Length: 156
Image (cartoon, rainbow, N blue to C red; front, top):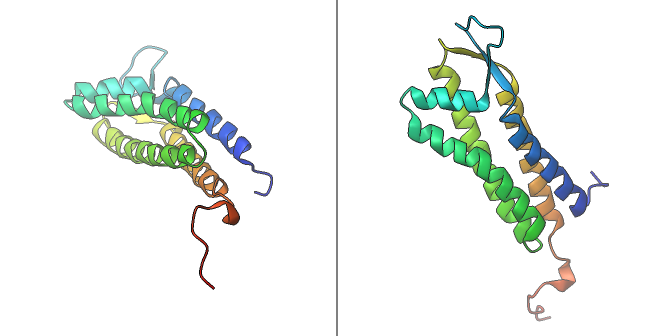
């Protein structure tokens, strides 16, 4: 952990967020009743089927969060001022992680007769959790030195 600088953390967070966006297109499960050779279903396919089951508001919310939050986290980390970048990105990452956990625990329960879900959703939540840990570490590393703070000196 001693070799992690703020720059390295920013790079790792951006790579992990790009993985999360790319993982939306990977096969996340297998359709049970499919007669064709390609019976895989992507995360977007899961979302579409989940919306077709009557949960369209939930599916729309998760789709927006799954696409917009990683981009917003990358934007925050790269373009906001020091310490605010990691703080804002940490909040967004925590919201994304909780939304992913909710969706990936509800969707397989509702689609139990439609698809077998693979390990990919769990991998995506693990990557989100690791990214959240990096952002928290970056927030602590971005703390200003003790002598640069704007506090008035203590009376002696």
